[in-house]
Image (cartoon, rainbow, N blue to C red; front, side, top):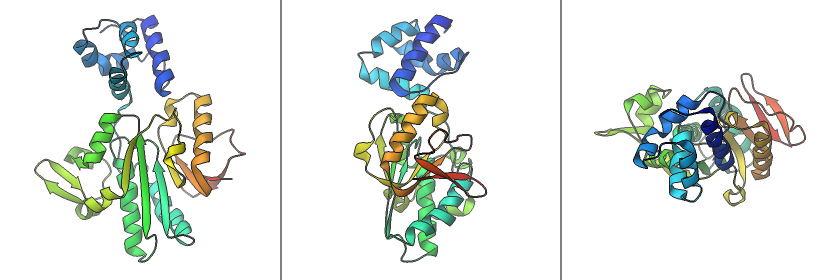
Length: 269
């Protein structure tokens, strides 16, 4: 499928409007590869024709957004955020409360929320009586990614991307179809479809928010809007953890930086 500059511009504007993702220049090849099967199924020959249909066809719109937003992810990605969670944040919160609420704002196929759930379990194993209850809310815009996450079944290739051997043996069961996440680890996580452009108020309040490796796809104004609204979902003294290549700027009135060596997190003012 050949995509002209003008057709690409039409689709890029649409994608940013419906889900916030800002495609860079010269990404025609990415759009073509990800939408090829949808275009073929619908017998469409141009992106503007597709955009025209999905303005009124919500199911097809969901398929298109799904195709453009599904990305590979890793277990314990970047490692230090999970070390910060286990060695700094969980001790800090468990010293003053018996429950903790965590929101994973871009959960993809489940690797991050399940990694968080395993860290919580490891902490509770080594600190009996601490954190008697916990909730992990995991949200994503991709329905297909959420379906995989809820299933909790991963092949050897997926588990080879960052899963430590001891945690694999402790929290997964080998089946004929792959490796199944432990029911106790899965039970801590609640999955919900959410577009970060939409309201968060029904999600409730959280002690910690993981919003990692998703803001890089948005414009600076949209990043600021999302981070401002996440601030409203954090409990007093709550924290937000961003991706390794992401930083929180122009919001010094809402957050204060906390150096963790390695890693930086931000606390709600």
